[in-house]
Amino acid sequence: MSIDKDNYVIGVVGNCAAGKTTLVSGLKAQGFSAVNIAQEHSAASQLWRRKNPDFLVCLSCTLETAKSRRKISWDQGRLDDQWKRLANAKDHCNLYLPTDGMTIEEVLDTVIKIVSN
Image 1 (cartoon, one colour):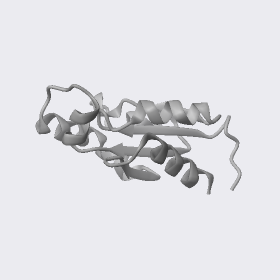
Image 2 (spheres, one colour):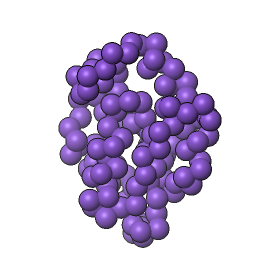
Image 3 (cartoon, one colour):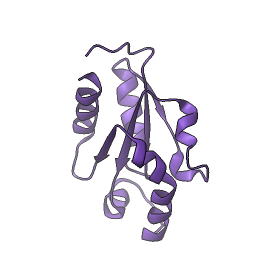
Image 4 (cartoon, helix red, strand yellow):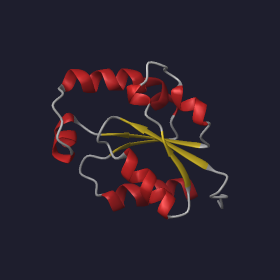
């Protein structure tokens, strides 16, 4: 499948430190139109829909992984709250990708491969 990178919007949601910003930056560097959607911080369960993505990626990582990636002081309860806010996006995503144990390049390559097929 050939997509028009300029007009095909890839939305990215996920919990804190799952790799949203890094993925969006990588996708943009490859010429894709991508947007980081901070659904995990919103009480609006369908905030992600406002960006009208053609393809929705939902990234996740465990609390242990999040702490290894970023200095965070919050606990599992906050992560659980984020996943409550992300539930609708996860239910409707085109790709759910746990990033634990994946490199930045592996995440980017996986998304590009799936979006392009």
